[in-house]
Image 1 (cartoon, helix red, strand yellow):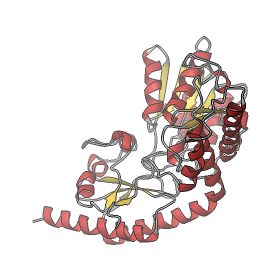
Image 2 (cartoon, rainbow, N blue to C red; image 1 turned 120 degrees about the vertical axis):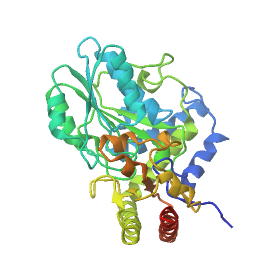
Image 3 (cartoon, rainbow, N blue to C red; image 1 turned 90 degrees about the horizontal axis):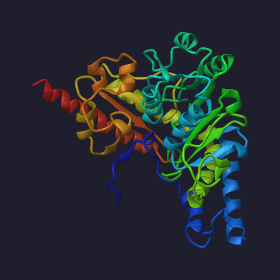
Image 4 (spheres, rainbow, N blue to C red; image 1 turned 180 degrees about the vertical axis):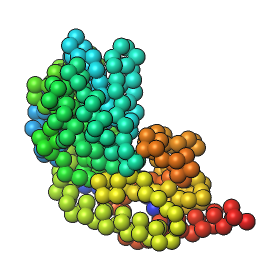
Length: 383
């Protein structure tokens, strides 16, 4: 009997798809070669890495040779930001990002600001989307890089990245997109987005943790941020993690094959959960854009209770009060604060994020548990 809670925290991490685990297994044992070796063991590993590179590139409409494998999305974001800054530091000294970025984007930006770069942080509206009028005013002739995520990890709000990229390119700036939360959930085409760099995270679409990738459009000025051998076009030294790279490629192929069908299914399940909760809980509020958001993400503020209290009262559910990287305290989410959400509303927030293995029965069970717990908490508070 499985007594684990219903897992609704797929924006934090996803379970490894069994097909992905099966694909990587041989590369943990018999096929152990170093891709840089010239003998058959090495050639076999090299071929596996290149197959995965093509599979990952296909997920985002890019070319295989433009994909750089990294150890995580955090590393890919750091490579994109610091690598471009190193390449352009003599010419342009202005950076632009948004107020809702993941720490792996915001912290490198702040580090560069402390080193003398000028940084503009774009505001977002009440739905969590970047304000385009502020963007148009922010990007200028000395802007080196604009970095805006494709979809927010807490609210799922999707950003107008293609419009922002067009503005960046008019001024000669480069565009970086953190697509860690979006890849595998919505269609992505780097050419349609107009981005020069784009970040992926394997564990967000059913690959293992510890592997990611950075798309770098050909001709983009970028330098490595680590010293070593000439792996990954000289941008990421270190022997390639073949098992995890194979897993990432398989996960990308499966996501691409199932993208439309799975997005439709998750959208329906998410909305069914939302409808159940809205009917039963007066004053329930949605955080994020009503339509322009990821199909799997539901960020709600429950009236009269704190999010952590509600989670503690529903051991049947594994979810989050916000980004997993910010969990653990009664502090207002930076994302919700940037959206000018009231403190009470922000503290009552709960993020419910679905995945490939979420079922209708689990959604019904989660709805019942949340409704019952909320009623118990609010009735007790009212005594």
